[in-house]
Image (cartoon, rainbow, N blue to C red; front, side, top):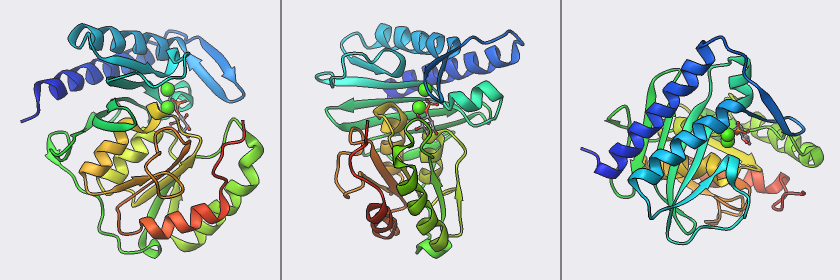
Length: 268
Ligand code: IPD
Ligand code: CA
Ligand code: CA
């Protein structure tokens, strides 16, 4: 049913997910490094990334790589490239809180063409390819039919490294909360995006995401009938650090609320 390429990536994501679970259940201490305030990387993130990168390179030697733990040159690779988050939800993983995943996207310039998100705690595999629809464990998925914010369950990510935007974020949070049914913050952006794609969430916004958090999720949402934009409603959602996704129907509504309270430039 899926292309060979997608099947290979699914296999790799599942292999990396199994590694995450085995390592968590092994009872062995996991060493943790602090990248910045509240920004952690474990030996498991690095090992999972090496595993994914080596397997992808073996099958696709000509493709570029943008992987979270080794993204030093800050440039967009030419031609097709894999965008990899080997462990999205590291803080959850460290605490054994079951919302973390492997996320692998395939992009060309700033456009995601293929995406695979694997949640190994629930054995849920989300995937999509341009023009071929979106799937959860092999079955087609679509975004919700929720008509307005009043009926919506919304996902978000809190500011946790750079507190300069905290006041504005809390204003935005308060405005969204007053307009919708509820807000959730499970702690893995990639899983949140997969949930928008399958209708468990109606929309999502976060300030400060990186391409590896949202490349795979973006194509899965689009193929499920959803809409993904930056805060201005434009297409620079992978690199602008401003991200909104929705079931399409409520996109304008949530975008208006977000843009009226959140800054467009991330204050580094
Ligand atoms: C983080 C998670 C979190 C989101 C952060 C991401 P990491 O990824 O997706 O939900 O709020 O912005 O950086 O660091 O666990 O891979
Ligand atoms: Ca991430
Ligand atoms: Ca990560």
